[in-house]
Length: 134
Image (cartoon, rainbow, N blue to C red):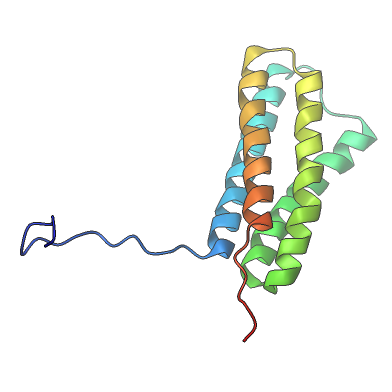
């Protein structure tokens, strides 16, 4: 005997593909990263970023995040998992570095979510479901 009332529809909870979950997590991480950079730049409007390292590192991190979103959706599962398991810890370390440089409360607040998304991305890739060979 079912506990659902007769004749009423029940919402279906479909499984979401791991690729979609990882792509969404990378996008969320990227959006937070962009927001943090924009907010930081607004705080320092009087000093443009003239450091060569900053001028190359910042776009490179954005390019890598963008490529990871696309690669997650079209790459082979084993390659996507490997790339994610390599790159997510790198971003985790960058995010921890963000905490070290943090001076304002908002930087600590957004930094928590940087780290959270890096951990979620790594964990989701690490626990990617596997098929058993028959």
